[in-house]
Image (cartoon, rainbow, N blue to C red):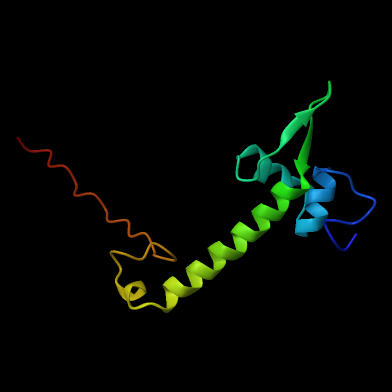
Length: 103
């Protein structure tokens, strides 16, 4: 299966098909669905997840757009301002001041 719109696939894809299209593990596809990042529906008594092909295409397009915007942001002048840039910003944990035992 090289294309989402392959003739042997119907309107809805299983999580295994979705994982194959995205080239991720089945578990990663499940996490995308459970988190709500990739919209899906549960079908049948066992509650098997199905992802609509058009939704998957939109998801992929949105990810490309997200990557494009992030790339543009990283190239912009504002990306060098630590207060505005949240990407790859290390978190600084400052130790708390010790409490004085004196009163």
